[in-house]
Image 1 (cartoon, rainbow, N blue to C red):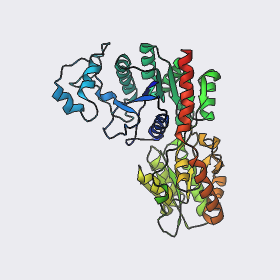
Image 2: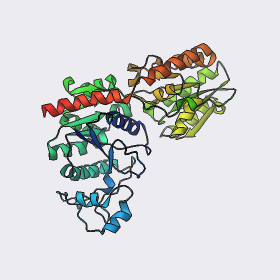
Image 3: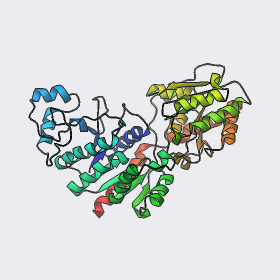
Image 4: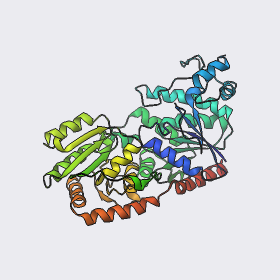
Length: 419
């Protein structure tokens, strides 16, 4: 079986959980010997792991006929695509996309990020999907998150192959209900056209059914998993006097950073031997710096900015408590990563991972008193810390992507059979 996947991020160049989840699922599915995966992203860098999936950069697929020399193609995109492949795709252009700005190869420049003209980039990505749909052989289309739904729809219309969309989040999660009508329209159309919808949690499934009017029979939950942390045992805590409590993620209203600061204020009213870290960046960072200052706890707060790779795992391992107070979290992989390195986690009941984790403390995101009590208990009582650390590590090590991959494969088999 051959799957054509459309995504927006892929490690090592990621901006959030979408890339991490797409990578983990793809690698988990690749354990199935008879499954070939082609993964399309807007802008690869050439250092992506292609041992389990073929990576195609939309920025290297021509959508307008040009006649560059082979040497020019090699010079411009040789680090991410063989010139022969470029010319093959060029020969399969079927539509007139001259209205779209392209370079001298007839390719579209993508930022590889989330720019101000994101909707335009999504439309351009759709044009690339049309060329690939005419060029490649595949049995099923899989689109990750709303950014790639239009590409998946176009590929389905061209090929007649079934479309599976993967809902990693909805705009109701990202906006606390203040939904962008353009984004909602893209999400709704993707769900309406899809042959099947995969959600990362029952929480998300409920939103898809109730807010987007989808038939429950068409919507399945496949919980995310976590990639094993390489050499997890090698990450040790840096010796220090104070305990460390960490928030790690986008500092946006969806993630509930203000509840973390307020809970920190209550903890510090009871004990002074605790420091708090808010790692990441986002549109609420300055507001959180001001909030910490207004609560008189700025001297106990640290804002190290965006962390990646080994920095993330070392930060999590250094922490005595990891906390995810998300207002609406479709899943949330970071608590699982924290538990892998032995760090007890506190998560909001409004998160998808709360559905599968037994050895994490769960509170309502708004209940800062319960959150503060949980933090205090873990940092003050070694027996609680030790139990949560040991049992949490054992629990998450059994939550693997290959199990999630088998569930997705069963959905593929079903939609192909019914198409």
